[in-house]
Image (cartoon, rainbow, N blue to C red):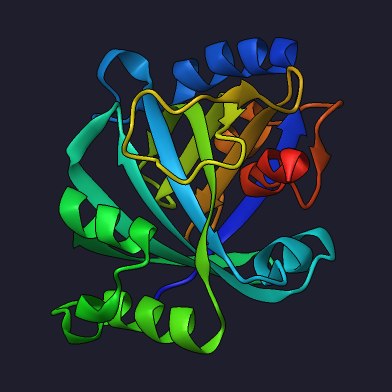
Length: 223
């Protein structure tokens, strides 16, 4: 499992507009972002005691979270992801699931997962059984990704963050969502061994604040 460096900042909408121009001057748009951006919908898992949420709020140095997500409303490509974090280092594991499998997970029909071909699906099953993990919150947002080959750098601007309230029917385009976090946007910077000076300079913002900022956490303000 490979870990990467990650910094995350909450920024204002005006800062995001300024960064967009600076990043475009020194980085290239991610080829997966048609038109420069894409929409992400994630369904996050947590325990009955809100273990993942509380670990995030309390800044626990070693933590993990599971989520299922798809892009631009296309349920033909859905991924289960586990994100692990140790201090400022992160790693992500992924496995494909079908729309029907995702529906079964949301409905609590999970026995099929223990014989899945994917280790990650089997791990989620084990933790649903042992730790009480369950689908907890839908989060929608728009992402603008930029990449830079030296250092394998990826910078993303996330905004228009919305919560699915208490619904977990994340495959439905009709599920109601509400905006969260005011005009807060999130700047994320990820890299391997080093962060090139040109990128370090481009992402500098006097008003940016490094913090334990989480789209999942702010989506939970409604319960």
